[in-house]
Image (cartoon, rainbow over all chains, first blue to last red; front, top):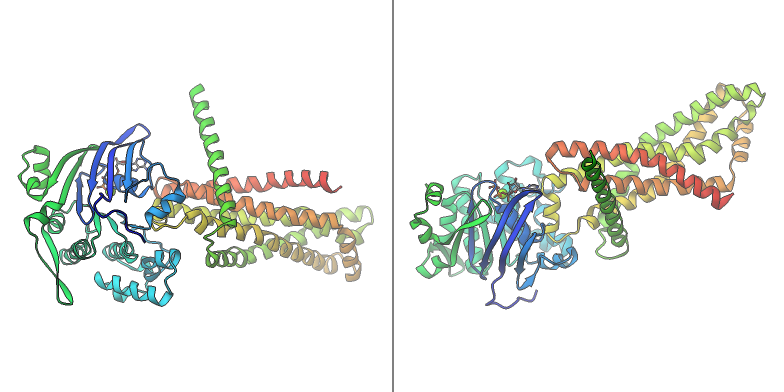
Length: 270
Length: 257
Ligand SMILES: Nc1ncnc2c1ncn2[C@@H]1O[C@H](COP(=O)(O)OP(=O)(O)OP(=O)(O)O)[C@@H](O)[C@H]1O
Ligand SMILES: [Mg+2]
C-alpha cells in the first residue's frame, strides 16, 4: 500500500463531540498523533476512551468536529470508503470481540484470509509468527470459548497485528494480564513502534504499562533487537492525555504527567 | 399521550427505514464483489439440511391429518375416492408453503437473530467492520441467499411427504385403492397451482431471513437484548409469513386465473 506523506500526522482529532441521546460523552476533544509515535489515553471508567477509538475507526460518527486518518477526512465518509481507510488500522477491542465461530488461527488470520490475496500457507506462517510474539502457539487450533480471559485478550492483540497495519489502537490491551505477560505485550508495542514505525493509541488504566511503553525504546542489535531505556527525545514523543467527563483534562509527556499538580490527576496517579 | 404516539410512530418509521436500507444493501451485495462464496455454501447447508427433519415431520403429519379429516367430510357426499385431490391441492397451494414458512421462522429466524444479536452486543460486528469486512456481505447476503433458495426446496419436500402421509392414511385407514389415490392427486394438481405453490416459498424464505437479520443487527442491551431480539424475530417473521402468504395469493390470483 502506498504510504501517505511521512511528515503529516497520522491521526488528527479536531473538536470532536458526541452524545448518546441526552448524555454527552465527548465535548470538543482534540489531539494529534504523529507517525511512529504513541499516544496514551487515560481516564476514569465511562469517560469516553473506547468511544474515541471507535470514532477514529469510523464505527461511530461524531455529532460535531472532524477526524483525519492518514490525511483523509473520515467522519464524512461512507462505509465503503471507510473500508479502504481501515486497511491500515488495527484495533484491539476492550472485550476482545473474537469471532466465536472461528478458531484462534482463523481469528488471527481473518483479515488476511478474507481481504487479501496472500496464499493460505503464507497466512498460516504469519499467524504462527504473531501468536509466537505473545506466547500462544500451542492454542492455534482451539476455539475462543476454550481460552481464558487473558488468552482471549492476547489473541485479540495478535489479530490486530497480523495484517501489519500502520496504526494500532489498543483498548485496555494489558488489563487483566499477569505482570510478566503484560510486559511481553508492552515490549511488542514498543518494538512495533520503534522498528516498524507503527503509530499507536494506547487506552489503559494500567499506569505501569503506560509508563513502560513511554519510557522504553527498541533498538536493533545484530539479528534481533533489544529494549532499552529511551533517551529524552524519544520519551518526549510519547504523549499522555487524560479524559475527564468528556473533555481533555491534561495533555503532556510522561515527566509532565508525573509532575502534575492537579488534584484529580494526582489522585488518579497514586 | 400524544407525545407517546409520536415517539412510537417515529420509532416505527425508523425501523422500516432501516429494514429497507438493509434490503438494498443486501441486494447490492448479491450482485457485486466481494462475494463470500464459502459462507454461502455453509449457510445453504445450515438452513437447508438443518431444517430437513422438522420440515419432513410437519409435512408428513399435516398430510396425514388432512386425509383423516377430509375423509370424514367426503364420506358425507360419498366422495371418499377424491381424497387425493383435496390433499394435493391444499398441500401444494397453502399448507406446504405456510407451514414450512412457520417452521423456518421458528428455526431460522430465531437462530439468525440470536447469532447476529450476540455478535452485535459483544462488539464482533464492530470487529468485523474494523477488519475491513462488510457485515452485510459476510453475514446477511449468504443467509438471505440460502433462505431464498432453500425455502422452495424444503417446501417441495414438505408437499411430497405430505402427499405420502395422506396416501398412507387413505390406503390403510380409509381403504381407498392406491391407484385411485394417486390418480386423484394428479387430477388435483393444476399447473397454475404449482406456480403459486412455488412462488410463495421464495418470498417467505426471503422475508423470514431478512427480518431475522434486521432484528439481530439492531439488538442492543446485552444478553437480555439478544433474548428480546430473538423473540421479536420469531413473532415478526411468523406474522409476516401469514401476511405475505395472503398478499402473494391475492397477487397470483389476479395474475394467473
Ligand atoms: N451504545 C451506547 N449507548 C449509550 N451510551 C453509551 C453507548 N456506548 C457508550 N455509552 C456511554 O458513553 C460513555 C463512555 O463510554 P466508553 O465505553 O467510551 O467509556 P470508557 O472510557 O471506555 O470506559 P471504560 O474504562 O470503563 O472502558 C459511558 O458513560 C457509556 O455509558
Ligand atoms: Mg472502554
